[in-house]
Amino acid sequence: MRTRHPRVNGRPWDHAVFDARPEAIADARDLAHAFMNSLTPAVDTLVASSVALVVSELVTNVVRHAQGTSCSLRLWARPGAITVAVTDADPRPPRERAPDLTGGTGGFGWPMVQKLARSVTVHTGPAGKTIRAELPR
Image (tube, rainbow, N blue to C red):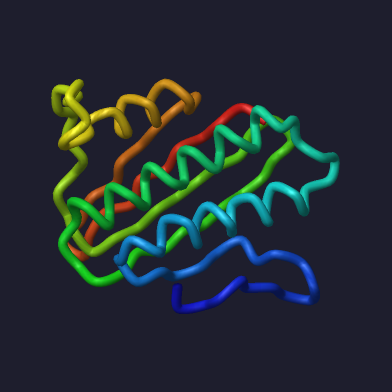
């Protein structure tokens, strides 16, 4: 992570840039937990776990599949929703593939994100893509 445990005025920050390396997955998940723990009113633990899982899966997809050396994570909270946005430099949209039931190649993350989120949008352009998932608060 390029910004280690980011904080602004003592509160967790809602945005960070990560190097596209395996340790970014845990760092992004930690940032999501810190963000969720900072919210008032507090969110239900199931909601917080779902947000952390979506963050983890989206950053994992960047690390495993995207071209480029970094990604950014942005989190928003509104009264009825939590929004997760992950941006990377690869303009190719995610693709669904058959899950590997033998445990070798995955294939479970993208469908899981789509099931946990109220909505998922993918914005692509020549400079990359942003995947935005909105989860119920």
